[in-house]
Amino acid sequence: MRSAALPLVLVAALTALAFGSGTRPATHRPPLVLLSIDGLRPDYVLDAQRYGLALPELRRLLREGSFASGVVGVLPTVTYPSHTTLVTGVWPARHGIVANGPFDPEGRNQDGWYWYAEDIRVPTLWDVAARQGMVTANVAWPVTVGAHITHNIPQYWRYRPDDAKLERALSTPGLLGEVEQALGPFPAGDAGELADDRRRSEACAYLIATRRPQLSLCYLTALDADQHVYGPGSKEAFATLEAQDTLVGQVRAAAERATGGPVTLAVVSDHGFFRTERELHLNAALRQAGLISLDAHGALASWKAFAWSSGGSAAVYLHDPRDAASRQRVAAVLHTLAADPADGIESVLDERQARARGGFPEAAFVVAARPDCHLGSRFELPVLRLASGGGSHGMLSDHREMDAAFFIAGPDVPVARDLGRIDMRDIAPTLAALLQLSLATADGHDLFRGGRAAAQP
Image (tube, rainbow, N blue to C red):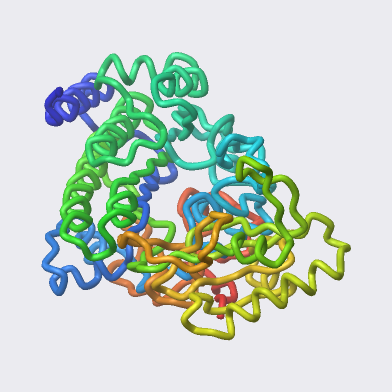
């Protein structure tokens, strides 16, 4: 395996060659780097000493900039809806990315996700930046295939041996080939090891050094992967986070070298984590109630109601939304399960309640699991099973353990300001204002120069 230090030396050399003396170019705004660490709970950083964590770069943001004690997430608290809210300032019901993948009970999409930027129904940060002629860059931010990003390496996967070909085809023409020639092979879209994050951060630093974008986005996923396997607070997850902290510092240093001065660095996450020990299979209960039928091979044959799971929550859809009898039968099944705390359901939301939270606008019901339980997709009994341990997310954002993170520092950011527990919709308009852009369609507000969007319950 190629040394991790070599690409960083290369980035520094490229920066020096491209920008000569390193004097900061004339500009009306410092460049913004938006870096996402999937699954980062804010307390890991805020209470690092209690956890025994060495996070000098993330803790530096606390001293030099502003931070949220927590970020109230979306419904559901999973990766793709959250990342889209982070760049649009609206809830999933408005931006259209309502889960990680489209509702697909028959499996026709072959486990495809919401990869394509054209599915986002409102303007994003990169859209408004493009309208002002800004240079933008992206490494693996979700829902960016076909996005209006100048230098774009989107997240996408299908079939691991050919993922590199797919990534090269979907990226800005020639870009990924150039990055791989400079740094080595780029990881597959769904690869979640620390080495994969290291290469993504190196690619981000490379693009900053060679393209000088005014807005850069980069997505790191290894912490999320480790917490799913080992659980939140595990030694494995914490070791990964400490290594990611180093990557944050390296990206920041690359950006400061490229501009010859300070930059604005925002580190965000999409959700928190719970340790889970149980697994609830709603479709097994719906099948038991005669609302789902299987063929002789155990595959779905027909359905009147179907539960589409997103970690700690599930949207229950009706095949015919006008079918009042099936709606009543589903309600009876769900409320019977919810009546027994041992069955793993925390609450059942109807259409009105789900829409009030900005999620799953076409679902008849939304089921929220208890913190120790996540939702599975099996049709076979039992409905409730023991899980193999590890962690999950997707539960209601009422729980502080589901809070996402927001840390930011830069020339125009207040120093050592605790913003309190903020609404995720406030982040995009705040970042837009720092770039002297307007994200007029956002429901949130600039945290430094205006009020806040109404927080969820």
